[in-house]
Image (cartoon, rainbow, N blue to C red):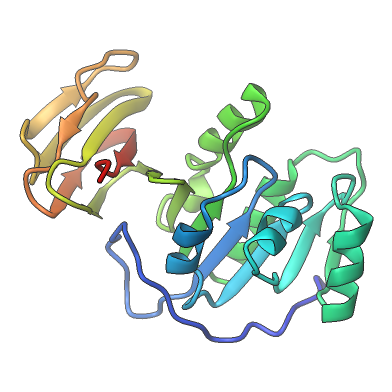
Length: 237
């Protein structure tokens, strides 16, 4: 049985609005990529029910003043100073062997699902090795996450996979790009953007869905068949 931390209830402000049910449980995961923007992290973490650091993601959490509830991975990237701080704070470590089938981030995602998370926010998933960044993006397409609102937040960019419907909240003028995954996406409808689509097909590998612009503060996206990657970039102030 995995160790569990003291999952203290906290509060958050969301920049991306998903269609969530009443039984809402938010998990935040820090991966081992480039450091996240501290201001943006502070906007997301206050209402987190569960905060997970994936191995070296501990550094990214601690650097913005966040103590994770649990650390997961083979811990080959966990600095001794960070481990000492975790020990002082009583943070449980869930240790896996170095030779394993999943990356540390995937282990963290699966742990969040075991804890019945309905929303998962991932920081520091991009940067550094291209293979890791691409693999982290593809984790959004895990079948187990199909009905769990899961989003990678990288500074002012938010990325999520959509296989049915979602609402993305931002500012007029923000950029929204949609990319088909796993073949053509059919029945794609976009509302609240300068270039609306209705029951359209986004072909795999094509750029039809790139660089749309929010014309309202909320964009509504529906996909009837297939899966798309939605990238929302906030407009520079």
